[in-house]
Length: 288
Image (cartoon, rainbow, N blue to C red):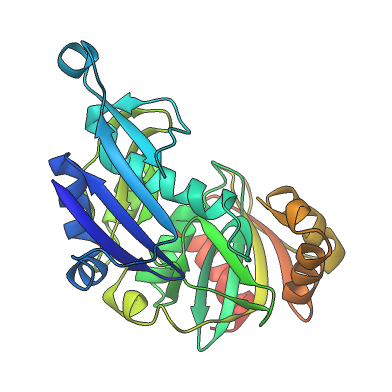
């Protein structure tokens, strides 16, 4: 049984679960947060439980339920997917609960306070490129899944959690230097998935915010010539707005925050057929 309060910038999360896989996942991917948060604190942003299914299913077809503040927002998953259920559920919490931040679907890495934002629909290849920039090129990981913008400072907030990898990308990322992968989970709703632990340096720097300087919309296109096209900030705004989880709910504040994030940023649409080609284009774009 795990019962711990985790400090996962920019939020505090209480997690309780009887699943040993959840405990092992936290020990592997959140050692710093877990070490400092074994005892519950008076305030948490999210009170999460990953619990077992009840009734006959508990024995015949074990299930895992995600509970937030005693509410069950999802259909249960097989018990052997309890650990990834925590990651998926936490993403949902950050994207849907009112925290005062603008939250968008996209990976973020940074170098010396300058952030590269990579919005992308599922299957675009952003997680593989994010991992390559982190482990091969030495960028600081802010987030693999969520771009979190503070409207008051116009800066991006780190949330350095495990990089979620799917199917073919698992073996690609496994070859990167310094990568530590967790278990593989077969037959999930996203296929086979695994997680890469964020570098210790990224976790340590979780309090260091960054300002958006580049926006890159990546697309992996097999057997296609690479391309890199600069696009207007207006077009980038429209594309990112489609993948913003709460811009409409934030009204004018969300609109102004996204405008401020893009002010002065250089925006590009890139297509590539290999990770090496993508890294070359990012080097050319950023000068890094």
